[in-house]
Length: 105
Length: 245
Image (cartoon, rainbow over all chains, first blue to last red; front, side, top):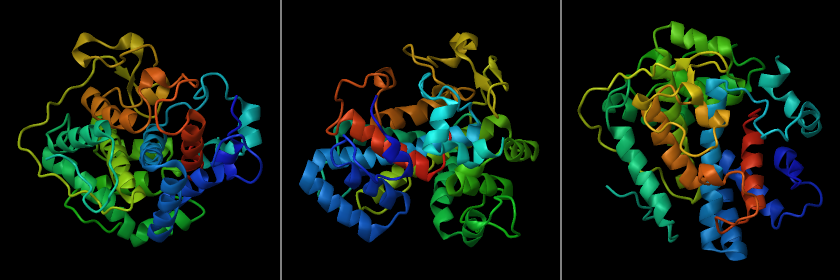
């Protein structure tokens, strides 16, 4: 299984995902809609991974700005979202159990 | 009108342009419970959230329901519809069932609420993509005339979620092809009570992300970045939104 703990709290250590720091940083600047930093990360990703890869990065980030709202506004059950791989222990390890919806239950 | 990004020198995948163009047409058309004009107004209000001072207060508050104030609206949508749009855009991770039921009890029907979620979420995909490539918002489409179809799925029931859902076993022929393929995780069921909204949203969403039937395939590379890289961006974005799902 791929270690994506860096995706939840930010990449702070070793990971086997190529350019993880750069991709996580891009996701963050898109979330904050920081124009200058988006331009900076765009240039870096295009130079490092290519234009097609950058378009995919933008599309993925965009997709998940939609998915989170569908999930959170409809209140669909979050247990089992990982297809059986998500567990209470995993949510605790990643800090997801501190998210408002779960912490308030 | 085909979507384009003249301010960028990027070549955007044809399938993505196609999906975005289809969504803009879907947005402008009369929907299930909302007119074309209302639907386009929703997309305009989504953009207006960036300017809303009350949204900033709510986002920073310890409790999302604290703070007195009024959302700054850019449309003639009802105050409760504006509240719904602004909360979904601005602070989705802190939405609650009681807030949802309050919105529905105030007069926004379950169907209109689900339709609004689908449109808000898809509009966020459009606008976030534009911002993500350093481009201005794509101009909103002109609303089309016509009446909403006012369809309620006979299989929709409120049990597993805060809104009615058509479980796969309850889908009828009248709903259309609600669950093509074998995957039917709850994210795929969330908008099912309004089939037209589900179809419009997912056509755009999967073209940005991955086709639903491939979401469980971690070995094949469908994009110019690896599956691991895709999921890293997905996970970071979801965590920034504090999305438990």
